[in-house]
Structures are given as structure tokens and as C-alpha cells.
Image (cartoon, rainbow, N blue to C red; front, side, top):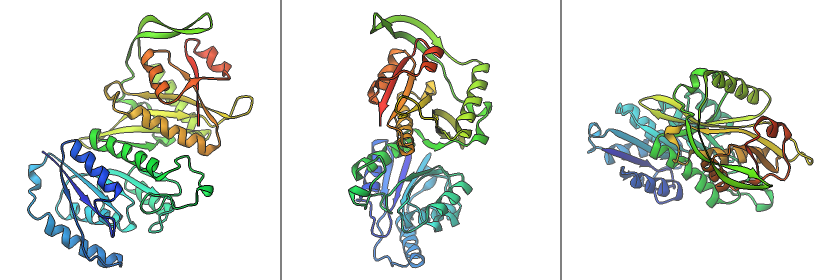
Length: 363
């Protein structure tokens, strides 16, 4: 049995977007869902916390936690502090989605989960949020220019973040939430010190290829070309060096992890280099994207790709460049991401991988 508890905030009840749609996701994935309601909360954070906590104790008093194999807490604002305190006081082991947590949340040793925070959140500074998440090893998703409700409140002329509307922001947050709810997957930026051979212990590169795109008389056609694509030990060690170099030279490495039985296993990653190229210096190189064989088809690649687009656009790029594996399935993925044949070819990639298809994605 699985149960999900929704902890609202001050004035942010369970029928507002973040908790409404995440609650729908919980129901979709067969969680018994309990939506808490808080009434007459003070505007003072300490008093409101005590009031909300007392109401939580009353509302959840009849739940027999030992009946459930999986417990998920979804919380918003002051509800994040209530959720962590409740789990701590009742010795409940649970997973968490923390929407815009307060600084007080981290006083209660928050358990594993993912965190969402906006840089225009007036309740807590971004630097404090980063420090707290780093201390407690919590993956943090920072969304530029959004407030405590994860919504834009700037005039459209002042917006510079590539996610332009509140609907798109909500869609982005719910995609990450669904990945965590459904598959226990979370995402975060990788640091250079953690990239080593052991990081890839649970990653399965194996890809069985049947048909590929091949260039024939200036046209791309599909041909039978069966082979198995996998990495040797030497390939893994080379990859480690490449990813480290990407970070050390100012690039971007972003990864998906699956958390099961308190074990964090790498299941996908993407990298973008920092050097601009092309006649107008408008390209950045998406140097690799891979999803472990056992986790393909779950939307991981799409989330990784969107994160790379977001980073590249904030760096000032106009296009991502991809020297893409020629397998039909791989090409179908890039097409679904909006990629088309590149207008300019990077001759280094052409020489290194003559069977790759050179693509670009306009940002």
C-alpha cells in the first residue's frame, strides 16, 4: 500500500496549482491521497507553525503508518516545516517533495526528497536555500524570477528566463514532480569531485540497434545496420575525464538519479560545453546525453534535454549543436525535441563520428 500526504501553506491550500496537480499525480500512481486543511493560521510564522502542526496531529491521528510500504509527503511553504517535524516526531521514513520550503524546515532534519525554490521568493533567500540543501544533500531546483508560489510576477518586458509563462513553469515543475512520484527519480547538477568510475556502477549503456539513418546521394535514408552499442572500461574512464573537463572549463553536467532502498543510482546524464562556435558564435555543443537501458521510455531524456536548453539559453546561445547517434530510435528522440539538420557543421564532430547526423536545436 502507498500513501501520500499533502501539507498546505498559509493561504496556499490543496486546491491551488502545485498541490492540486501533484495530488492528481499521486492518485494517478495509485497512492491513497490525504489532503490536509489548515484553518485560522496566524501570519506569524512561529505561531502558524504551532497551529498547523496541532491540526496535522489531529488530522492524521487515525493513520496506521505501519500498513504502508511507501509514504510520500508533498508540502508547500510552512507545510514543509510541519511535514519534516511530523516525520521526525513519529519516526516515519518517507520521501518528500518540498515546494518553496522555509528556512525553518531545515531545523527538523529533512529526509530525502527534491526541493523547488524561486529566486524571487521573499520568504527565504536563494543563498540560504542553496546552503541548506547542500548541507542536507537535497537536490534543489531553482527557477529564475519566480515568487513564493513559483509564479512570475514581473512585467513581460523584464522577463529574461526562457520559461515565459506560469503555465510553462507549472508544466516544468510537474514533469519533475511526476518523475519523482512515479519512478523515484530526481535531477541535479553534478560536481567535478563526484565524477569517477564508481558513479556509473548502476548505469547500463547497452543499446541494441537494428536500423540507422545513413546519408546516400545527399539524402538521409533508413538502412538495416544491426549492432550492439556499449562501453568498455576504457570508454567509461574516457567519459569520466570528458565530464570532468566539461565542468572545469565552465560547462554544464546534469544528471538523473533513481533513489531506491536509500541508494542513489545514476540513470541518466547530459553535458553541454562552454565554448561558442559557428560563423556567428551562436552554437553551444551538447556533447553527450545518455539514459540507462533499464530506465528508458520514462521521460528522463526529455527532462535532461530541457535542462540543457535552459542552461544554454541563459549562457547566451541561440542554438544547441548535437552530433547525434544515427539509430532510428535516437533520431526519433531528437526530432521530438525539435532538432533539425544543422545549418553549419562542426568539422571536428564530422571527423570523429562520420556516421552521426549533425543536428541543431533553436533555443
